[in-house]
Length: 386
Image (cartoon, rainbow, N blue to C red; front, side):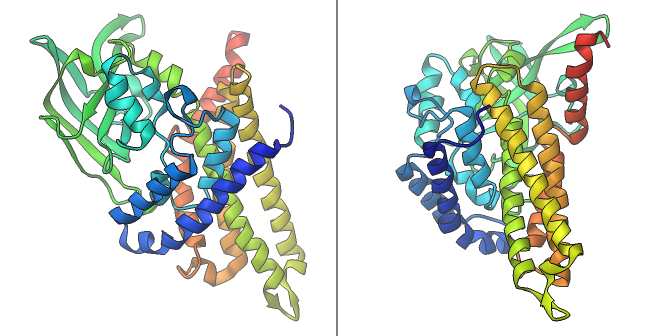
C-alpha cells in the first residue's frame, strides 16, 4: 500500500465530511429524540446526495454509479461514520450484490437502485440461526413452477424504507460426512408481494432511528425471475459481492471514533481544574495519546484491507482484523471520551453517551468479534494443516 492519500482521495473525504457536518449533524438531535427520520428530511438528504454525485458511489460507472474503488469508498464510509446512521442511510449505498442482476432484473432493480428511485435491504439473519447461515430455516420449496417461501428473518436494517429486499433462503439440503448441509438461494422480493410482510423489530439502545425489522414469509410465491444469481448459488453470490461489507463497519467505527476524539481533545484543551487545563495532567494526556494511536492504527488496518481488494489480493484475514480491531477500538475510545468529560459525558447535552451506546452493536453485526477471530485464526492455521 502506498501510504498517504492522493489529492483526489483527500477531496472525496473532505467533501463527504462537509456534507455530514452540514446536512446530517443538524438533524441528529431530532432523530435521537423521536427515534425516526421524517420523510421530508430523508428525501432531502437523498436529493442532495444525488446532486453531489455520490449516490451509489460504490457502483461502477457502467451502471450509473460514481465508480469509486474500494479504498475511495472506504473513505466515504469513514466520513459517514461521523454522523447518525439513521440519517446517513439516505446518502444511498445500495447493496453491491445487485450487480448480480440479470436480464429484466437490471431494469427492475439494479438501475433504479443506483439512480435512487428504489431502495433495497439485505436479509440473512434469523432468530434461531444468528451467525450460522447454514442453520437458516426460512426455506423455499418448488410448487407449480414457482418457489413458495415460508419463514422469518429478523434484525433486518433498512427494511422499513426498502422497496424490495434481497433475501437468502434454504432451497435444499445435501448429505455430507458432517451431516446435512443446506443449499442457499438469493431472491429479490418486492414490498407488497402477497405472503410477504414487514413489521417493526426490537427496540435497540444503538443507533436510534435506524430500525431493525422482522420479515415474515407465509406461502410467499416467487417465480424463477426473482432468483438473484443461480438456484442454490447463494453462497457464490455472497462470496462474490458481499465479501467486503465488514470493511464498511470498520470504516464507520474509525469515523465515529475520530468524532468522539475531537470532543475529548477539545475538552482537554479547554477545561480547567486545579488552576490548569486538564490536558496538562498526565492521567488525561496519556489517555489522549492512547486514543489517537488506536484510532490511527484502526484507520490504517482498514485502508490497507481496502487497498488489497483494489490490488486483487486475498483480503479475508485483513478485513476481519480491521473489523475486529476497529469495532473494539471504538468501544474503548467512546468510553475514554466520556471518562474525560466526567458526569457531563453521560448527559444527552453532548453526543458522547449516544456514541457510547451506538458503539456496542459494532462488535456484533456483520460478524461478531468472535467470528472475526475465528476467520483470522483459520486463515493462519489452515495453510499449516491445522
